[in-house]
Image (cartoon, rainbow, N blue to C red; front, side):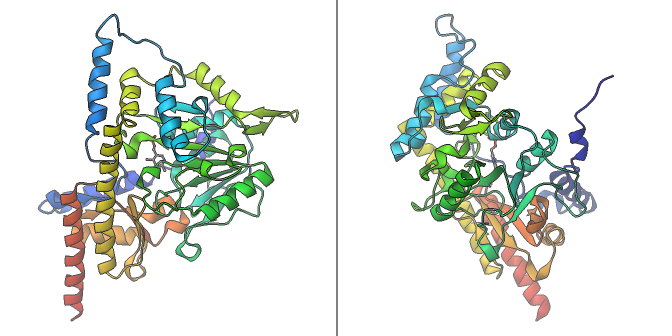
Length: 419
Ligand SMILES: *Cc1c(COP(=O)(O)O)cnc(C)c1O
């Protein structure tokens, strides 16, 4: 008899994006004249083409595959040396951070890495996540059996939730409950908040004291402009014994469809086996890649390496500057509405308190109905997201400016109605 992984049955329905799609299509059907006006600021997918340096490198790599002399078959499962070196040098050593080439594990992205990493950890680790949160950290642990059942009103039994609200500046203290794995994301999706050096120091001290692991998601580090905001957990003294870092070219290089990222696993990081021996996670993660994967394709690794050329750097910088410019326009528009606005400074997401005490979904409906603008209801990211909206800066400038105009018109209309 075939058994399934019963933990999958605990997952609450993937409700957020399907529900957004359902409401948008219902609105479009009932209001065919307004349907073409709908502007989407909901999904966190990039909109702009790849940097030219990546396109050129990819074209050359495809041509390699067309010749017997330069043909490439299987590569090393954890990435070609030239790419691991470019990453370790470009993202870390050149910034004074000690990371060696063989601590870089190239992959097809951070979402698969965050999920696969649980394969080398024991089951039954106690998990702490922030609320609101990128749902992947939570759901992968549910699938792995690290939680209890879904709770009425959201969340899962057995997970420690760390509320992130304006009251604590989206900077939660380490939990007093025991936890073995904590997920931190800075700059944050969905709140757009960043964690300060001081707060990361506190997390690293806590993790080392409790022999816990920090899974640090730095998918948005390329958006950091303020020099005092850490871009890597490994800027913090002591992080090499308690942290891994997930990085992705999805947002920094527009690679959401190309698929490439990497995980940093320091050689000094250990977990404990059932018999009490300390085992380096680096050894297990290397073995996991060698056994389960044949790595990332040649054209994709060549495209990723091109991001570290002089040209590539400038173009990727221009790309993130562009999205940050969008974020500034969106922030300003929301501020003009008199709303409390967070994030959107070193991050491509603007996190906005809903007007007039509306719930997230009521505000979603209002913006769709009155302005034909689609945003993401904060409640979709966790209980503490209720009462907030996430507006994505991944859009064309034309669309962003139009969204800003419609938001202003909305206030004017409402102000008119009150007059
Ligand atoms: C977009 C995003 C990623 C990147 O995922 P990929 O699988 O590399 O595309 C990782 N973490 C967060 C929080 C994200 O929003």
